[in-house]
Length: 271
Ligand SMILES: [Zn+2]
Image (cartoon, rainbow, N blue to C red; front, side, top):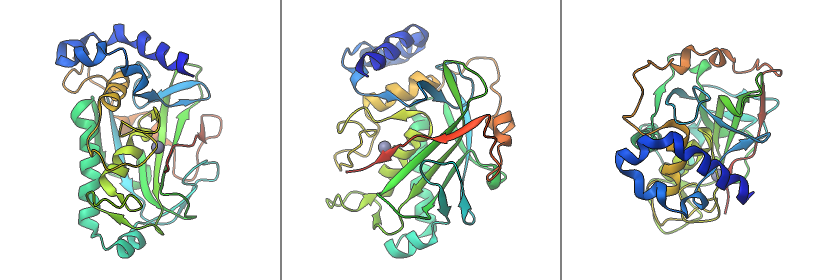
């Protein structure tokens, strides 16, 4: 697997010239950086939102689930429900929950050319957030991509993020790693939702162990996001097609097209 990861990193450096110009040369040149991020691979393909071309930006819509939803073919988050029970049991207000979610999206927006906006029609949101209908673990993500082409990079069509409502949740670090910080967890799961996997057990926000050492994206996290979407502010002159207008957005909540998409892939944060 290491060979594959290194190959991805080296192969993409040439198309990331603007990364170096933007001041990340030291990071890009870090021989150890390839060990600090890992692109999500589904059926052997890396995946991203928007254009399949690496380093191109994307706009992605999101929403909290408004009712109980079921995704029959989903590996994770197959059943999701509104977050109210989690808020009640953890004593977190809906406003604070949304603030933390928004802050987590902003972490990725700040470093890579990917933007997240509330879905005008929540039923067509590209990223859905909710609690698990069948609680397990702490938090999971599920990523579905367009399989209608055999392009090297798959186009993500929908991502799900689900939290376990039977666990306690908090805002901020408190030293008790059995209670996860919402912002950290959202940022981690959003990382999966946009095409990143775990690089290892520790050291990056995308590491699979929850740790209260940093609430910020680490160099590997940033490099992975930039590899997929380019650097914030480096968008080309050509207008990007809003993701909401893309054909993949037509994928209805409960009427996915099996020939085009497959709900698959574990992406969990576990201790
Ligand atoms: Zn994870």
